[in-house]
Structures are given as structure tokens and as C-alpha cells.
Length: 401
Image 1 (tube, rainbow, N blue to C red):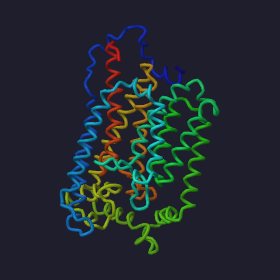
Image 2 (image 1 turned 30 degrees about the vertical axis):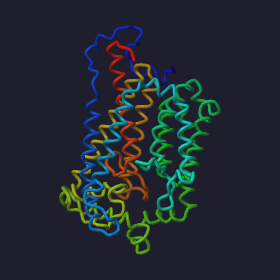
Image 3 (image 1 turned 90 degrees about the vertical axis):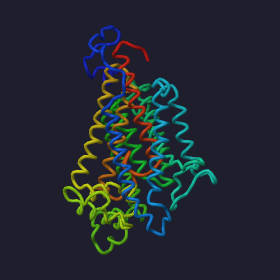
Image 4 (image 1 turned 180 degrees about the horizontal axis):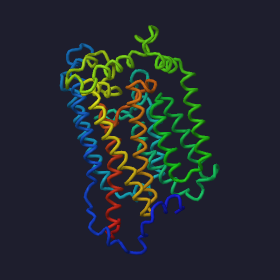
């Protein structure tokens, strides 16, 4: 393995068989990661219930006050079972099957356009019907992109500084995924997946010149997508001046009510269940804008708590990744750090949108927002992270994986 991956830390190589310092390392789960995820899931369940109780009084929804909570808890249960299955699979399996997983990701993106199989909601075709649930395919592509890109980077390590041999094949894949996602349309998922791929490639040794050039191209592409699409341009202009008469009741309606929620929360919030904005004023209060409800009901303190939990989870992901690289397990290390990149980018965008720092874009808050597909992909990613950590500990005790 190249120096960029294998010699970050002067940890002794496994070839020395001198692991006595780590003989007592437990092979249990990483409690830091588990506590952060469970805490976020618990906060999410409470806030989803709080944000959806008003739906029972609205003729638009015709549901019970606990309907969304039950669905949310069912999604958590299903995602947890899937995560437990993934946790038991060795990382070598994912490396070996990385190419078929990448191909499958492309196929499911195409599948949403097949009549009778793909499902359209509000003009967007982002879901496939599985009978017991509607699966948002872009969420599964986030996981597949992590696995495929980490494996590609390891296999092409000797060519990471070459545009044609190292970067171009992955660039072609990224362009294909972006094209299919834009057709849905789903610009938010496109940005997150592109950030995942570029981040892993950069951590794996991609030339800084190539990285910066692609960053400029991606930013230009996103700017062009905003300019070329009237409703996206309207959102951007509304973001620049959300309180103007032209936008406050139109494209800036969500943003203006989200900002009101943040303002009402002040330091300690108005109390659980006391949000006014969730009373059918703030659209998508239980999904994309759930942070606004958290801010209104728990205040600055609640927002800081959620941010700290995400910070600690992302930090542990990068630490687990660095530990894998020290053990000369580049694929596992890049995958773990890719999980941290994914969560970090999505959290920054979601909270940035809710607080008015970024233009309005539909992205859920991992583990907190309502949505079965997002919970499934997020918990599967955590299972992969925990599996990497488990194999690290086994190796440090002198075992085999």
C-alpha cells in the first residue's frame, strides 16, 4: 500500500507479531458510536411524535396522533434488524462484491423510471415499491457509493495521481450516478454522494490538483442547475431575502417559518410539545425541517446537544478509519471515514438549510428525521462502521478476521 495510506502512524506491523500491548482490548461494540446513535434515535422518536401530533386535527392527513410515531418506530425496528445482519458480515465480503454492488446501485436508480415499479410523489420519481415499504433508492446508493469508491481507491492506489488511469473511471461513474439522480430529480442526494466519492478519493491519495479542479466543476454544475431550473432559482433568490413580500409567502415560506421557530426557541425552548410552527405552519416539520421543531421546543441547548452527538459520532468514525489504516486495512479505513464524511456533509446541509445558512434543499437529518429509507441506510452505515471497529480489535488482539 502506498505511504499515503499505510504509514500515517508508527504502529507496529502485524508481521512483527508483537501485539502484547493490545492483548486486553475488548472485542465488544464501540460504545461511543452506539450511545450517540441510540441517543439520536431517541431524540428523533420524541421529536417526530411532537411534530406530527397536530396531523390528527388536520383533515388533510386523516390519521391518529400516534400514526407517524408507530411508523417511525417500525422503521427503526426494521432498520435495526438489517443493521444486525450487516454487522455479522466480514468486511472482506463487501470488498469482494464491491463491483456488483456498484452495478446494482445503477440498476436501482434506473428502476424508479419503470412504470409500475417506480413510484412518483409530487412529481419526483425517487422510490420503488417493495410491498411493505416504499424505498427511496438514493439512500441505498449512498451506502453502495461508499463501498464501491473505497474498494476502487484501494485497487487503483498506484494510479491515484493519474487522471486517466486513477480518477477518470470513477469520474465516469460519478457522472452516471449524478445524471440518474438529477432525472428524479434529487439534487440534495447528488451533492451528498458526490461529496462521499470525492472525499474518499482524496483521503485515498487523489492528487490535490485533480481534487480542486473537480471541486470547481461540481460547484459550477450545481450553480448551473440552480440557474437553469426556475423553481431552484426561485428558492435561491428567496434564500437571499426570505422576508421580502415577493418570497415570504412563496418560495421562502418554509425558510421564514423555520427561522421563526429558531427565534421562538431562544435558550431553553418553549417546552416539549409547545411548538407553534408544527401546527401546520411549517411544511415537512417532521422530515427536512425537524431541527426547527427541536430548536423551538428545546432551544439553543437542545440544538447544541444534537450537534455534539453528531460531532462525537463523526469523530469516532474518523478515528476508527485511521486505526484501520494503521493496521494496513485501507479499504476498511476509507469506508469508515466515508461514513463520517457522509454524516458530516448531510448534517451540515440539513441544519444549514433549517437555520437559513444555505438555500432550501430537501435532505433529512440522519437518525432524527422521519423516513424509513433514511433510517435504513443510516443504520446499515453504522453497522459497517461497527464491523470495521470489531475487526480492528480482533486484529489488535492477535486474532484473524
